[in-house]
Amino acid sequence: MSPIALAPLAAVRTRIARLTRFVGVGALNTLGTYALYLALQYVMPYSVAFSLSFAAGILFSLWANGRYVFAVRLTARLAAGYAVFYLLSYLASLALLVAAVEVAGLPNWFAPLPVAVIMAVINYAGASRLMRPCAQQNNIGSVLRDESKPC
Image 1: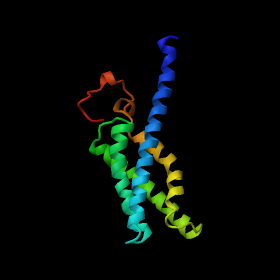
Image 2: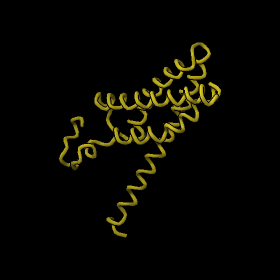
Image 3: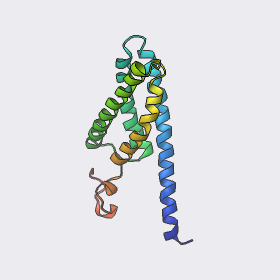
Image 4: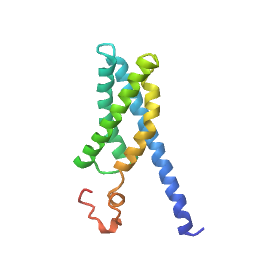
């Protein structure tokens, strides 16, 4: 096969590898924030415990996704965009959590799990858009970009 014919296959492999790393980071993040949520809900309302554990998860996610999943340099601009996206994600997650507990009657300890599954798809889509390498964000070739400057 020619190198040109292999290019689409390489792109698919890259996307699969990135998705696999995202799932791994997400699983680690979910386990950590869920453990924090379980501990905190004993000393505060479940919604406050969820909020604090979610904030801790955003910080971990920003660092781990930037470094290990998407391999991008973390800048203030990227962190700000990530924070805005995850604020919206948080509001959607909290609404789903309250609905799961108050409307569907799921127990406090279980309700964050289906919420996490639902939000994982949305969060991957958002994170992958936010954390594209600069050349892809700007739609220019990397040859034209000064690698020492942020996007």
